[in-house]
Length: 231
Image (cartoon, rainbow, N blue to C red; front, top):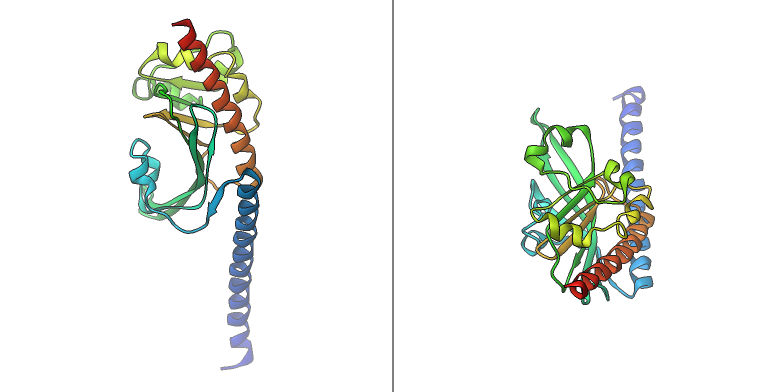
């Protein structure tokens, strides 16, 4: 084989090796950053693959959808709000087939909070024309009095509108406007799931979402306490 025949193979092989090496270093740097983030919170970090989240959270299909569903880079700790709550954060990934039959890899970074006090079933997500068109399927949009901007930007649904309004109040909604990220918050069976779409967060993204979660759970705690006092 002539050198001119070999060179393209060498170049392609070198390019692939370079990409794989860069990816490995990026993942290693990210895991190091998540380790430091966990330590700064006094929490634990485990980079290994875990497949128990589908059983832990059967109310959220994200942890059981597709093929080879797993969670890795798990941060585990506790917060004082909502009666003392266990929190988990990490990357959930899975494979699924598109309508054209092609396999597609998905990653969703997330934070969960396991509340020790009762919370209503609620979903808060960025509103869209598509959601408005299919309102009969996704549920009626519950408007929160006193926050027109929030009502314009986010869609709130719940099977119990009164219970929803008792905790998602005008004192809570400004928090959603305070972040540049469009958050998707689901509460079911007293577990809060916070995500932002199908992509992995940076270390900074994890940090800012965890900070947001702390404030959100403290606000929910206050609204729960106010609701019990009023009752």
